[in-house]
Amino acid sequence: MAKILRRIPFSYRCSWVLNEHATLMEKNSLIKVKDMIVSLAIWSAFIGLTILVFLAMSSFALLLYSFDKKRKVAHAQCYWWASSLIRLNPYWKLRVRGLENIDRNQTYVIVANHQSLADIIVLYKTKMQFKWVAKDVLFKLPLVGWCLKIAKHIQLSRGNYSSIKKSYHEAEEWLRNGISVLFFPEGTRSTTEQMNKFQNGAFKLALQEKKPILPIAINGTRDAIPKGDWLFKTKVLGTLHVLKPIDTCCFEVHEFNRLKNIVRLELEKEETLNERSTILTH
Image (cartoon, rainbow, N blue to C red; front, side, top):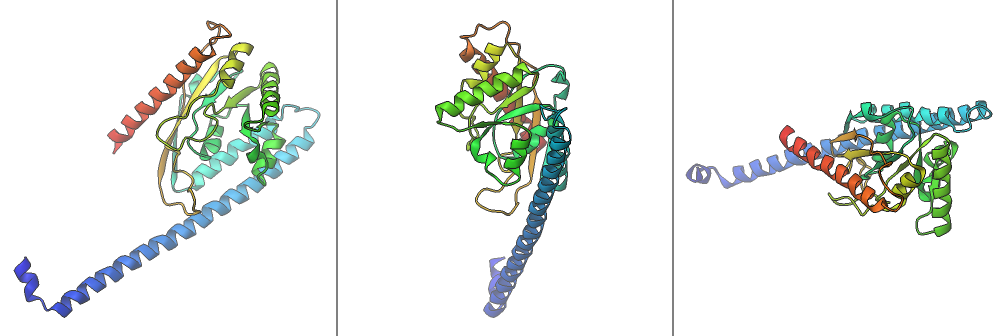
């Protein structure tokens, strides 16, 4: 092969290399243009759908002000919003399992691991009535924050004791009024393959109010939303698995650490199973 190449004039070889490089550059340029067009369409759809869901939530909140104090109808508008966003994004695929583990007449302390901002969208696929415990920063965002306020979700300022206490009492009230409360016990998104340390709040609350824990395992969403860029480039296969509820009746109030460790173990087990499944699929 080397002898054959040496017989080809040097000028022809240079020309071939340059042509190949130009072709590769052209392909990369076309891919980038395509990514830009698709990403622009995705963000436009997100803004458009979020405006629509805000208008729908506002309208129902006003029309049903005297009849829907829990803002259930307003909250339910997020179901079609989330489904539409997932369906319209060509980079996202989502598998939902375990919905049969949800008793629609039961009130839960819902506990989910946290990989990405996309988890907020994904969790609406459960079609459950719940109140988020969400960082105050999210409430300050245009449209998204307004929707959180309309649906009466629970605002939490991390590191602020009075805010933590206030959000805890709000969560108590919602549970006593038959509305589940959803926590990300890690407090913030995990930036590694491992879950962050769990905070105690959700588990203390479940034991105090004698409510079952409903663990929800989310996997594959870590790269769902671009970090430090607006271009979507990575295709993700996310999974949302609703695990079997954990009854808290057999726990003493002071055993929140034991409960926390059991829930974490269940979520870690599901994460490992999901990783194995992904490897086998590939």
